[in-house]
Length: 459
Image 1 (cartoon, helix red, strand yellow):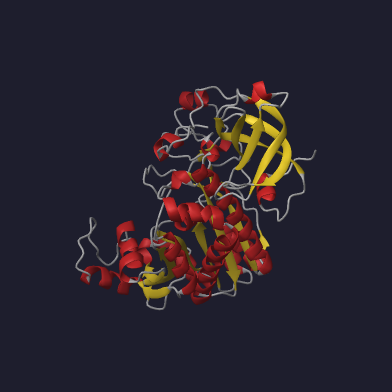
Image 2 (image 1 turned 135 degrees about the horizontal axis):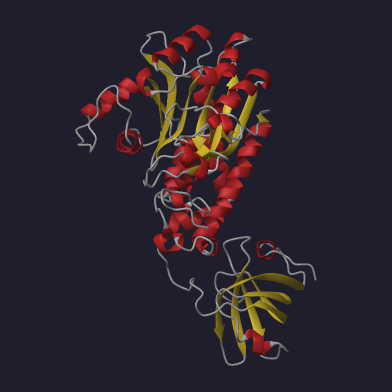
């Protein structure tokens, strides 16, 4: 028989008679004349119960099944008398594919997240992580659907680059030079390297996306990005996915409108299409998650300037670990206070001092601030960072001179301001931070299949 996924079986309105499923044993309980097997194939959170009687020719093999073993089951789909389950399979044949030894580390008990990170190759078999990565898959697909429906073009921006979008220098170097030769010469001679110059893993696809927005109108890039930042916080990873739309003929207000529409769409999509998996997080991870998601959908996001936000923080009476002063980059504790305690909903901060933002952000008329925006959300802090881009060549030139940025690697970027420049805007949304927001998972390591963090590149 052709295999049917367990999700499809459980969703059946009526029994088709005989079905064939395959999966992994979550639990098995033996009675006098039969065994109860809970089988899961990853297609959904729920297991299907299999009743295997001792009249089966292969019952001696069924008795050997352990948690983590793999099996195929053929049998009649019948209404289950058990509470909380619609169907069960009364087995007519069981094919034991493999037997997991007693050392199988995922047993019927709660395991800590720290332990599960040490066996990241097996943790998708748990309820929590199976649900998390099904949601991740669905949200990635929803992003593409959202942009397809809005007429955006999907750009595959390069992962290897010769320029630093953020100007922070926290990049992973890519080289084909022999370490022994480098040691012998006492330096890295990039002229002899693969590209003939220094190359790095990208921190952002934005600069590439700008070029295509200035030709195709509206584009987005959605791909891995890399930061060589030696940070072990719960919000940082060395490799993570970034969604970056870029829109021609768009200003800062349009940028924020687009970001708000995107977030509301994705949250609504998750609540409609990932209900079973989200329920797990609402019941066992964050009891307030359901209300928070409803707030994200139903309430407009607040908007205020950076300077107004600093005033609120200084007058709130709360003692922060990092003091608040105008001209500093806000810390996570400041961002979360604004979103969680003061506004109790997502909030856009705009018009940051130019000294704390990258060179490409458009200078405001005051000459002191730039047309930047950050979206702060409860539980996370900054989810989105974006801006209207500086389209005026003379202002961009002066800004790069001001911060001492070598213009040579950016000749092509400056060309875009010479040839048909237009106002345009965009942003970056950390995909993992979005997943943390909608699941209540508090550590970025737990929404990435195999996290890359300082000192850790296992799996």
